[in-house]
Length: 211
Image (cartoon, rainbow, N blue to C red; front, side):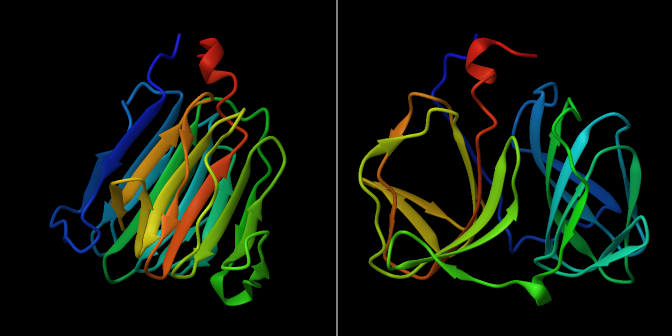
Protein backbone atom coordinates (compact mmCIF):
# COMPACT_ATOMS: atom_id res chain seq x y z
CA UNK A 1 0.00 0.00 0.00
CA UNK A 2 1.36 3.39 -0.99
CA UNK A 3 1.51 5.63 2.12
CA UNK A 4 3.62 8.61 1.07
CA UNK A 5 1.45 11.30 -0.53
CA UNK A 6 4.23 13.21 -2.30
CA UNK A 7 7.54 12.00 -3.71
CA UNK A 8 10.15 14.35 -5.11
CA UNK A 9 13.57 14.46 -6.67
CA UNK A 10 15.85 16.87 -8.45
CA UNK A 11 18.65 16.79 -11.01
CA UNK A 12 20.97 19.59 -12.10
CA UNK A 13 20.04 20.08 -15.75
CA UNK A 14 23.21 22.07 -16.34
CA UNK A 15 25.55 19.31 -15.16
CA UNK A 16 27.38 17.24 -17.79
CA UNK A 17 27.79 13.48 -17.36
CA UNK A 18 31.09 12.13 -18.73
CA UNK A 19 30.20 8.44 -18.98
CA UNK A 20 28.89 6.99 -22.24
CA UNK A 21 25.54 6.13 -20.60
CA UNK A 22 24.43 7.28 -17.16
CA UNK A 23 21.00 6.74 -15.60
CA UNK A 24 19.86 8.89 -12.66
CA UNK A 25 16.92 7.27 -10.86
CA UNK A 26 14.25 9.66 -9.59
CA UNK A 27 12.20 6.73 -8.27
CA UNK A 28 13.21 3.36 -6.89
CA UNK A 29 14.44 1.05 -9.65
CA UNK A 30 11.73 -1.51 -8.79
CA UNK A 31 8.93 1.06 -8.98
CA UNK A 32 6.37 -0.09 -11.60
CA UNK A 33 6.10 3.53 -12.75
CA UNK A 34 9.79 4.33 -12.87
CA UNK A 35 11.14 7.80 -13.72
CA UNK A 36 14.74 8.71 -14.44
CA UNK A 37 17.16 10.82 -16.43
CA UNK A 38 19.21 9.10 -19.13
CA UNK A 39 22.45 10.79 -20.19
CA UNK A 40 24.10 9.52 -23.36
CA UNK A 41 27.57 10.34 -24.57
CA UNK A 42 28.36 10.76 -28.28
CA UNK A 43 27.13 7.72 -30.26
CA UNK A 44 26.10 5.91 -27.03
CA UNK A 45 22.89 3.88 -26.79
CA UNK A 46 20.22 2.95 -24.25
CA UNK A 47 17.92 -0.07 -24.60
CA UNK A 48 14.22 0.11 -23.72
CA UNK A 49 12.95 -2.99 -21.94
CA UNK A 50 10.63 -5.42 -23.70
CA UNK A 51 6.97 -5.57 -22.66
CA UNK A 52 6.92 -2.14 -21.03
CA UNK A 53 5.72 1.34 -21.92
CA UNK A 54 8.40 4.00 -22.28
CA UNK A 55 7.75 7.75 -22.55
CA UNK A 56 10.81 9.77 -23.56
CA UNK A 57 11.15 13.56 -23.52
CA UNK A 58 14.37 14.85 -25.08
CA UNK A 59 15.84 17.39 -22.67
CA UNK A 60 18.86 18.11 -24.87
CA UNK A 61 20.82 16.84 -27.84
CA UNK A 62 19.67 14.50 -30.61
CA UNK A 63 18.70 10.83 -30.58
CA UNK A 64 17.14 8.30 -32.94
CA UNK A 65 14.64 5.56 -32.01
CA UNK A 66 13.26 3.06 -34.53
CA UNK A 67 14.22 5.35 -37.38
CA UNK A 68 12.69 8.44 -35.79
CA UNK A 69 15.14 11.32 -35.39
CA UNK A 70 14.37 13.30 -32.24
CA UNK A 71 15.63 16.75 -31.28
CA UNK A 72 15.45 18.66 -28.01
CA UNK A 73 11.87 18.96 -26.69
CA UNK A 74 10.53 16.14 -28.87
CA UNK A 75 8.38 13.48 -27.15
CA UNK A 76 7.96 9.78 -27.92
CA UNK A 77 6.08 6.77 -26.55
CA UNK A 78 7.21 3.22 -27.29
CA UNK A 79 5.39 0.05 -26.19
CA UNK A 80 8.14 -2.56 -26.52
CA UNK A 81 11.87 -2.97 -26.79
CA UNK A 82 13.85 -0.45 -28.84
CA UNK A 83 17.32 1.06 -28.84
CA UNK A 84 17.86 4.79 -28.33
CA UNK A 85 20.95 6.00 -30.18
CA UNK A 86 22.61 9.35 -29.43
CA UNK A 87 23.99 11.47 -32.23
CA UNK A 88 27.52 12.80 -32.48
CA UNK A 89 26.96 15.01 -29.43
CA UNK A 90 25.64 14.26 -25.97
CA UNK A 91 21.94 13.76 -25.30
CA UNK A 92 19.74 13.81 -22.21
CA UNK A 93 16.30 12.22 -21.82
CA UNK A 94 13.57 12.29 -19.21
CA UNK A 95 12.29 8.70 -19.17
CA UNK A 96 9.06 7.23 -17.78
CA UNK A 97 8.73 3.44 -17.78
CA UNK A 98 5.55 1.58 -16.89
CA UNK A 99 5.48 -2.15 -16.19
CA UNK A 100 2.33 -2.73 -18.26
CA UNK A 101 1.65 -1.91 -21.92
CA UNK A 102 -2.11 -2.42 -21.53
CA UNK A 103 -2.68 1.32 -22.11
CA UNK A 104 0.04 2.17 -24.59
CA UNK A 105 -0.20 3.73 -28.03
CA UNK A 106 3.15 4.48 -29.73
CA UNK A 107 3.43 8.13 -30.79
CA UNK A 108 5.98 10.75 -31.79
CA UNK A 109 5.39 14.43 -31.03
CA UNK A 110 7.77 16.88 -32.70
CA UNK A 111 8.45 20.22 -31.02
CA UNK A 112 8.51 21.83 -34.47
CA UNK A 113 4.84 20.94 -34.98
CA UNK A 114 3.73 21.97 -31.51
CA UNK A 115 0.65 24.18 -31.23
CA UNK A 116 0.07 25.91 -27.91
CA UNK A 117 -3.51 26.44 -26.76
CA UNK A 118 -4.98 28.70 -24.12
CA UNK A 119 -5.57 26.89 -20.83
CA UNK A 120 -8.42 27.33 -18.36
CA UNK A 121 -6.20 29.72 -16.46
CA UNK A 122 -5.69 32.91 -18.55
CA UNK A 123 -1.98 32.94 -17.63
CA UNK A 124 -1.34 29.37 -18.80
CA UNK A 125 -0.90 27.74 -22.20
CA UNK A 126 -1.07 24.00 -22.90
CA UNK A 127 0.13 21.45 -25.48
CA UNK A 128 -1.43 17.95 -25.21
CA UNK A 129 1.12 15.22 -25.91
CA UNK A 130 -0.76 12.00 -25.10
CA UNK A 131 -4.22 10.94 -23.93
CA UNK A 132 -6.06 7.76 -23.07
CA UNK A 133 -5.62 6.13 -19.67
CA UNK A 134 -3.08 8.78 -18.71
CA UNK A 135 -2.70 12.28 -20.02
CA UNK A 136 0.63 13.93 -20.76
CA UNK A 137 0.93 17.61 -21.63
CA UNK A 138 3.20 20.63 -21.53
CA UNK A 139 1.99 23.59 -19.49
CA UNK A 140 3.56 27.05 -19.76
CA UNK A 141 3.01 29.35 -16.78
CA UNK A 142 3.29 33.11 -17.14
CA UNK A 143 4.42 35.16 -14.12
CA UNK A 144 1.46 35.49 -11.78
CA UNK A 145 -0.22 32.26 -12.87
CA UNK A 146 -1.62 30.36 -9.90
CA UNK A 147 -4.17 27.67 -9.08
CA UNK A 148 -6.50 27.20 -6.14
CA UNK A 149 -5.81 24.54 -3.52
CA UNK A 150 -6.81 21.19 -5.01
CA UNK A 151 -6.10 17.47 -5.25
CA UNK A 152 -6.16 14.93 -8.10
CA UNK A 153 -8.27 11.76 -7.62
CA UNK A 154 -5.96 9.79 -9.93
CA UNK A 155 -2.70 11.49 -8.99
CA UNK A 156 -0.39 13.83 -10.85
CA UNK A 157 3.26 13.91 -11.85
CA UNK A 158 5.28 17.05 -12.68
CA UNK A 159 8.73 17.67 -14.10
CA UNK A 160 9.84 21.31 -14.17
CA UNK A 161 11.57 21.87 -17.51
CA UNK A 162 12.39 25.55 -17.06
CA UNK A 163 11.73 28.40 -14.65
CA UNK A 164 10.48 27.67 -11.13
CA UNK A 165 7.18 26.33 -9.83
CA UNK A 166 6.16 27.27 -6.30
CA UNK A 167 3.73 25.96 -3.68
CA UNK A 168 3.27 27.88 -0.42
CA UNK A 169 6.86 28.40 0.83
CA UNK A 170 8.35 25.64 -1.33
CA UNK A 171 10.32 26.29 -4.51
CA UNK A 172 10.69 23.79 -7.34
CA UNK A 173 13.39 24.92 -9.79
CA UNK A 174 14.06 23.40 -13.22
CA UNK A 175 15.02 19.75 -12.83
CA UNK A 176 12.49 19.10 -10.05
CA UNK A 177 10.34 15.98 -10.28
CA UNK A 178 7.16 15.65 -8.17
CA UNK A 179 4.72 12.77 -7.87
CA UNK A 180 1.47 13.55 -6.04
CA UNK A 181 -0.61 10.52 -5.10
CA UNK A 182 -4.39 10.68 -4.64
CA UNK A 183 -5.10 12.67 -1.49
CA UNK A 184 -2.15 15.04 -1.83
CA UNK A 185 -3.10 18.72 -2.10
CA UNK A 186 -1.28 21.70 -3.56
CA UNK A 187 -1.84 25.20 -4.93
CA UNK A 188 1.05 25.77 -7.33
CA UNK A 189 1.93 29.16 -8.79
CA UNK A 190 4.73 30.78 -10.77
CA UNK A 191 6.47 34.13 -10.42
CA UNK A 192 8.75 33.64 -13.44
CA UNK A 193 8.07 32.09 -16.88
CA UNK A 194 7.90 28.35 -16.22
CA UNK A 195 7.26 25.24 -18.32
CA UNK A 196 6.35 21.85 -16.85
CA UNK A 197 5.75 18.38 -18.24
CA UNK A 198 2.53 17.17 -16.62
CA UNK A 199 1.18 13.62 -16.35
CA UNK A 200 -2.06 12.64 -14.63
CA UNK A 201 -4.63 9.85 -14.48
CA UNK A 202 -2.10 7.07 -13.87
CA UNK A 203 -1.75 6.76 -10.10
CA UNK A 204 -5.16 5.61 -8.89
CA UNK A 205 -4.08 1.96 -8.93
CA UNK A 206 -0.84 2.78 -7.12
CA UNK A 207 -2.87 3.86 -4.08
CA UNK A 208 -4.55 0.47 -4.19
CA UNK A 209 -1.19 -1.33 -4.07
CA UNK A 210 -1.07 -2.32 -7.74
CA UNK A 211 2.27 -3.77 -8.78
